[in-house]
Image 1: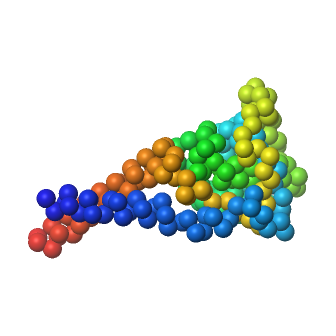
Image 2: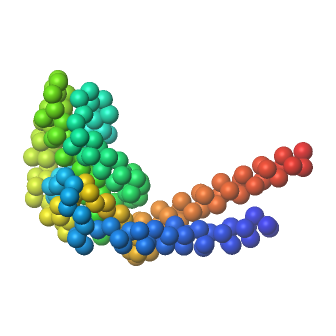
Image 3: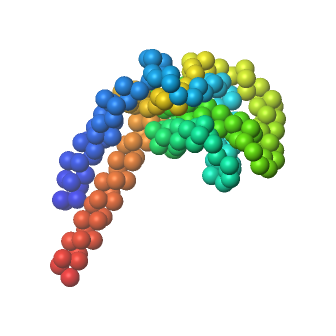
Length: 207
């Protein structure tokens, strides 16, 4: 059973790599540890506001990508959001937003606070911003209906800055089951894809 032996050898090392490789970088980038402040300041979000913005993020970024009159602050905010999207794995890790104990919760706060700041900045740009204003109104209504301002968590009073980046708390991944199971599943899928590729290449060589 060479395929089974391959899985047994590779899976533990792959999981270790996924969890441990980014640790050195991750621990060096936390705004709460006194990061740079020479960029644009981004107000924090409450836990409830973050959940609402998450529901509208795709619509916000769609408008941002079609903005005809971007200025420098707009570009810095959009760049910050795109970086945090990557850092947070695009919100794919379960419970990144809903669970404040998630290793990805702080960076989720950062990307969604940046997204809200980007939307509010677009209101100030020249040109026809009616679509932006309509979206702001929809979001305001959703936040009122949810009482979003009252839902707080440990990162609700943490401001962010475009000169800093927030990465996941990788050391906490093994202690957070939704995150750990996500990476285990990702590791299995990756190993399965590698194994399938090896089999296909092997068949081609023998054909």
